Image (tube, rainbow, N blue to C red; front, side, top):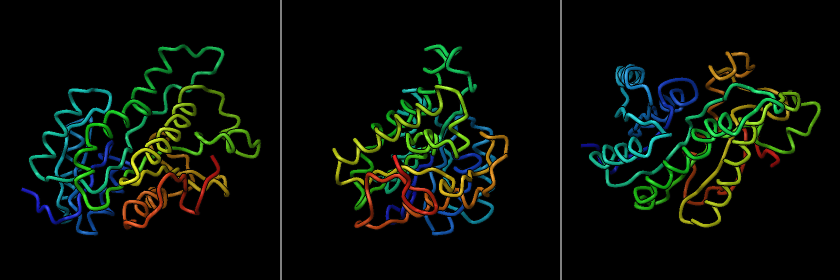
Length: 247
């Protein structure tokens, strides 16, 4: 059984990239890490690696597109704790980058199932455990591509990334975050982008074939900052590692 006095966090998509680095950094704070992973083999390998480094980690099989998987994940987490301090909705997909002229509703739906419906499924399912914590926090891993201000700025590379699914899904996630924050004030809801909007930089991950200019550690700075925020911390915000990002 996990010590219920230890701060706990569930990270979706935790077996690699931003999720795994966030897990590593928060484990160094002595937190209990619930490492969500759709791929159980990769998830267990990642959890073993963290455990070898001294982390208190529980691997949680978790496919955010499956109601059954999310329900099973709640059941597993409840076996270890009666509350959840932090939820990090990190799992995401870039889609296929299909141009608007060729995009279909089915292709967009598949991206929304992970990037929009996934965070809603997980947040809804884990809300009772979050509400049992003293000052719960939810961090949504969004993207500068979800910002209308960024996408309409011709100086930003994403303004020339002509696709529908990914950027619109992150814009939807931003709105969802705001609506949660307004409706559930006892839980802090914030979204981040793992880049530096002002400097036109983004983080190198699998999603962009590691073409970003920032390290995965730099990319997790805003995630970790919000995860560590106290009861007086912000809610309903959109930030990167440098500060606020325009909606």
